Image (tube, rainbow, N blue to C red; front, side, top):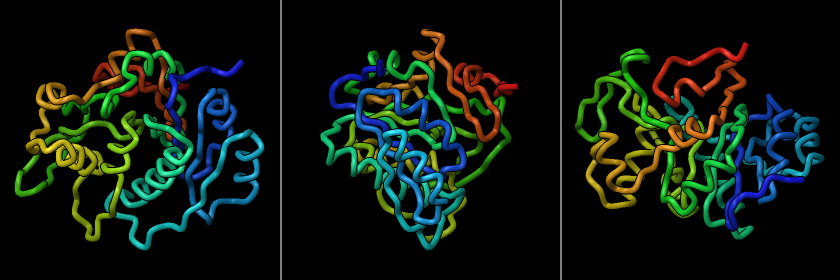
Length: 237
């Protein structure tokens, strides 16, 4: 029996097809699921995903990938979300194509209807220092939300993942996404977690931890269960 998600919810898997076996996890949900990837992906991978029952959407890669591949992420996500909206989805989850989220249905029950939700904000204590300038504001430390998995209203999601960066500004993709959300809500560019939560942003990491749910990042063999509590990543093996 497939896992039921709330009415109007869909899943957008975005990125390359290196970990095709995850299709047998994500096809277990009773909701629209699409995998948005590139025209250059191996035909055998595309066929495997389609045979699992997941719709595959192919796009040309952007001419400029953007800093830390931001344009790659925004393109594949936007195309996938657009298709989900055509299928009647009003709230969606965007997830990297190398991740598994065990218990996503439990988390959704608590945040359904939210405008946008990220796993958590990085704790600089466990991350290398990163300095960057955004709109004239100088940031030191990783004061931004994790972008691997994002829940949200479909129109909000289309806005924050819309458009490309046209020059190589060394700004983390997470900060660009968060800035766009603040712009969408006509809020000031204040990245403090307390300000964000006061204005409607939800952190789903603590909810997942409360229900003992697990997020695995296969590419790096990471278990995000610890990092949802702002602890160091744990290796799967």
